Image 1 (tube, rainbow, N blue to C red):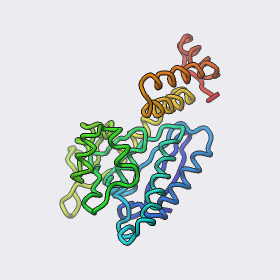
Image 2: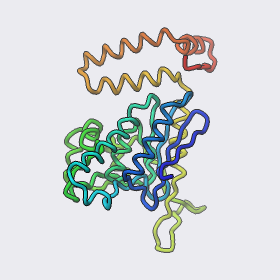
Image 3: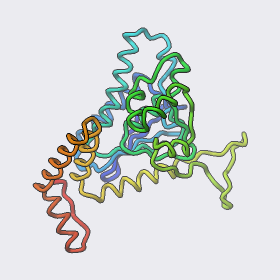
Image 4: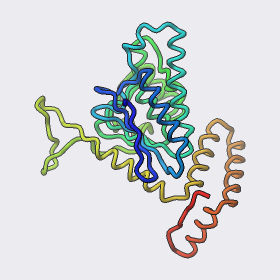
Length: 276
């Protein structure tokens, strides 16, 4: 399987594993869609992590599949990618992208449909599609501008520039950067036979798991409602968004979790949330 889904307690993990660079083609998108459907049907999940196997998160869409497409076929391919990524964004629980390496084109688009992005220092991100005579088709022209602002988004899309993890963090594309290469006992990077640093994906996955565990300790219904409130408000005026917030805030006072959370705070003990 090119898309592997596993679950550890209340945290799910999607791993992209389509060697050598985890590119997205029709079959991979189909498998991703199946994994999302499985997650949607599961109970008790608090968060989902998406990462890649090997050197890449996702290095882009499969150019060999796309190169001979006609407009109708290209439209279906874009719809498949957008459909899968829309479903990820719409998951009721937070989704964390652990960007372990190359995240180009469709890889950046996959990352930005997630709620939070943590990058390995080995990560490289960008939308290089204009260099191929096309534009991003899996949501890149829409989500990126909403995430980092239209000016910076246009710069990245128009130039096709690839940026490193630090730059991605500086512009708000990712929220944190963690180590991404193996080191020896002196803290120096371990090199392969070609003299290049050996990539280590464990730190970024560990950081994503740590954040997922922190989220999982909070009121699950509150986290889900907070995600919905933020995402809904992004497409509304401030006044309309504030009404959504007030309504969803009030509705939580009908839940057992709200009673338990506030009672636990007063009693100075950990809350025992039931997602009810």
